[in-house]
Image: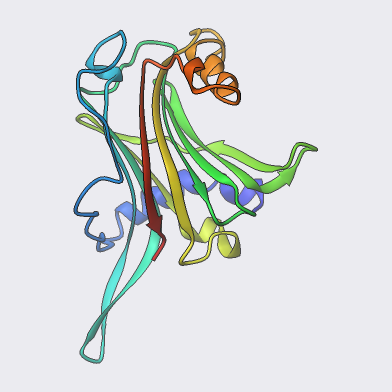
Length: 212
């Protein structure tokens, strides 16, 4: 994946949303659920309730059959209230994937924007291949939704790719850098022990999603 090509994500999503695409029905149940009211501090704008991954695409008749073709990968996180706009807020959803040499996808929200980080594809910086680029979620009520065109990934993200080990987290970081705070302790601490997780709220799921 080339960075220049990936920089077109926001524009691609905007065009798709206005092109009359027929969205796929979301899963009957979210891939991840978490009890409301269990955020450690800071209130409902940090309280994770659910998360899911699905696609949006087009459906057309082929003979007597309706054939669905996915066009976009759509990730969402729902909170107990609209997401906090306090500087330093970070909401993220991550999942392992069978694509990108067994890598992972992580979607981020901050009050100033958002991004998608893909580990296992992209440029090798000596610590493994990765790619990070701007992808601002749409905020509607209590739900954050990130939409990315599947064309941006090409052969790196084939149909029937599996996503698993879903993890949704809310954190409060230093407003100046956006890096130092509960997210830093959690990301590095959980390498050694789950008890090091100090995120404001965390939801986990062992569900598996197949891209199709």
